[in-house]
Image (cartoon, rainbow, N blue to C red; front, side):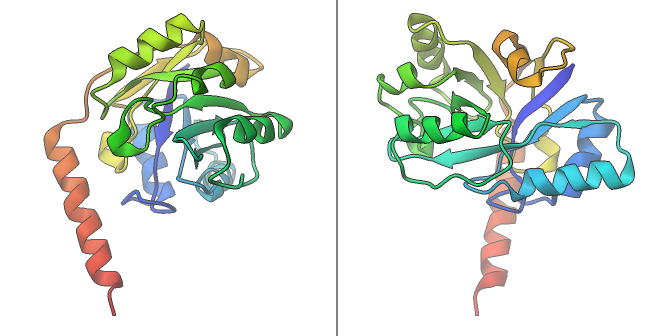
Length: 211
């Protein structure tokens, strides 16, 4: 399965709707997508509803990017919000209790709230070892290997146009969460023009929100 595992919609700080993201994902031939909005599962829940109602040919893996006290973490397989700003260890305990799995999001990328604590590698299930916006992927890979953690790739797309910049190849399995631990990924950095387009879009949104 061709999977996109790190996308943000306008439910958090993305610029496009869940519906638009799904349309693009289907157009690009993705088999699975996870909407991982910041500290809210609502994007994933809406995606599940849209796919069910419109019978779209794509699987939704519910996900969320949680803000812990030491950095961001990607949680997959849960359908409830998790309290933010807890420690990485406590957050992982809650996610696992809800039946999910935990992956460090863009570790060492301190400019985007990636954890810089090596100890966090010990408590997660896996690591986002390639992030299309991070300049610290080499460190993520190094420490994931050191602590024998499986790795995934993430587009970290904040607009529909960037969906699929990084694709994970998962085994066809009845247990999608388990298939994450054997993922292979391929992708490239999000083009500068797309990053600029995102920043301009966010600026327009903020200006429109001002009284």
